Length: 523
Image (tube, rainbow, N blue to C red; front, side, top):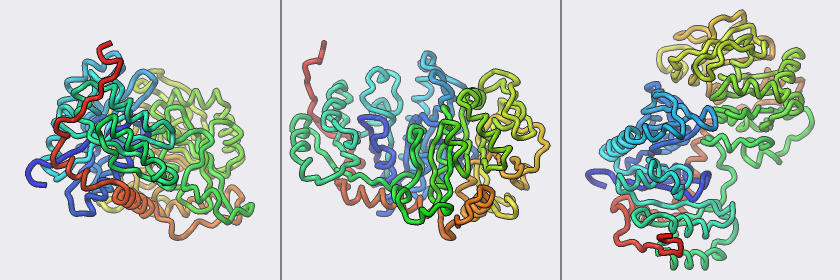
């Protein structure tokens, strides 16, 4: 691949079709073959983000895809990130930095600016890499949004990208989705659809083959792969919708594994806040054998667990009101009074203070917190966004002498605290709070630190009276992430026509593609 690098857009017939995993698999497969490859998602809407080395924010899926390429996360890979704070407005992160809030009605004013940014960034990546694997957003057939689109066919038209259309067959109706999604597009957009990928298939592919031949006959486009269902790919979910109430987090094998003797397993309840952010924090706990993590939204779930995790949120004050209305606030207060373990992260930590003064996110001003910690929170317009890598950048961050790493993304600051601090951070000073079995911090990613997590779980087991629990000595979250990325690459290598995909990357959209005419045309 000489000169300007090639590129392809992986679009979907729906949200959660598996675009992110297909992109990560392609990135890893090409990287293993010696191709200089980078991921790209022009516009992402997610509250699950990570911090880049230069202090910016990008969507978690693009960080995983960068990992698959052997690259550090970069704001180049996701230049526009929308973080929903309500059903109508989102916080805009532009090239990694806060750029204001936007609603559906005023998005038009942003369109030209954002389009220029994403087109420029993709062109820059193509100058530096042999191949760029772009991920679309939602469905490419959201024709009501087409005029303002910068993430799907709007981007593909601007950069002349061929489009691979991915569908989730596990939901049913995929063959109709492939046809309908293609047919509803106008002629110019249809011309960019180069082929189809069936994802999450269970069973014998030969049974599907007649349908694939018929779809090719009526659309003129081949199916370039049928990727089987892999239920052990679960880390780094980008969408908080992947955290429904009652869902167990982690690999399915952990749900039926041996060692279910009472008193040997830890039950973890993760509170499913309405505007949850960085829900992936709890995934590190689910990597541990003998730890059962479940999303809950009721007082009973909070009361029954050995450990409760209150995660981050994009709207702390609004979610605090929800916590109170659901009776979860009272359940947390009762747990704290009984010395039952709670770990609160970022927005969850802020809720446990005495007061929150928020004139930034909610505009509500001073409101009472749950009062479990004797500290006060003040929201400020300037946002704390930083990555901390333990001792690697010349600082020492630790908990009880154990080196740790993590990252911060928040507007709220602790402005007064009478509590013992949890984290020793030589650069920023003490961080977080601890009172007996109650622990809180603004740091995300802390639970992915292996030695720290093992010690925390040992302490939690003792506090909860689970005497038979022993944390595994060899659980490694990064190694599990690496294994899953390699599995994604193995799946696409075995089940996709990589030669055909590579030709698309190198040669661009198909020449003289067929256009589907249907009875609604011109109506």
